[in-house]
Length: 297
Image 1 (tube, rainbow, N blue to C red):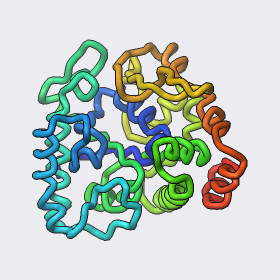
Image 2 (tube, rainbow, N blue to C red):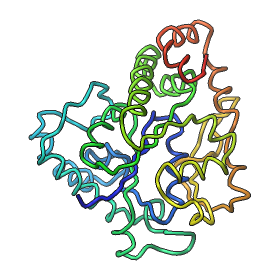
Image 3 (cartoon, helix red, strand yellow):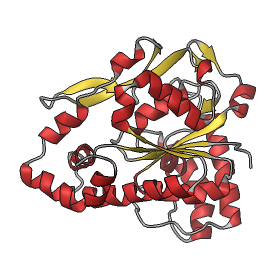
């Protein structure tokens, strides 16, 4: 395999995975492909049409071999074992996309103001983000990459479901998917080597410790991170108006004593407050096991 000891961040969209990805991207030994894992193969709307077409053409042999769209993030069904040829091609595509990701918000900067050389980028370990239905692909990735590291992330189910509902997903559907995803994360944490499970709330409570713990889980030296890279995007505040927060739009670098001030600790409370009593009860019933398991009752 071309990718040695890759790192996969696994969790829910709107569940804090951007925060984890940004903290790990601050490490010079980790580099990401163009987009989240499903976007590596299927493209994303913000990319030029030619880029999307090229990605889908390169993905087509895998779809043909497997008879399904393996990396459809909206598909929450289990993934059967892949064919050897598909595994080989997935490894090649992920490695190639890491080398193509040379924009400022991607792999241009190794550290603040210092760009990766092509040789350094080739040697950097792959860092991918698998969200939603791709939570169910971790088992297959562990077979493709037996030396991989996995960082699973859970977040308050009420906040996650509210975030998905606000983006047009029916609340009950979002709750059912949350339950499926949490059960899979818990199972993988027990059954897959080097799979560490974190709670979003614990990370934002102690950011300095979170950075050290995430680096340890990824198998990299936290001492090589001198400044933390974070990107900003709009999120909804308590009154419903967008506010700047860590995410994936504008890149900034922060000292180890200042980056923690960029984190929000009231996001869950704000999102819970937008749920009615009936909606809260609906989530509680659909996600009973997960909410109890991860302390969100």
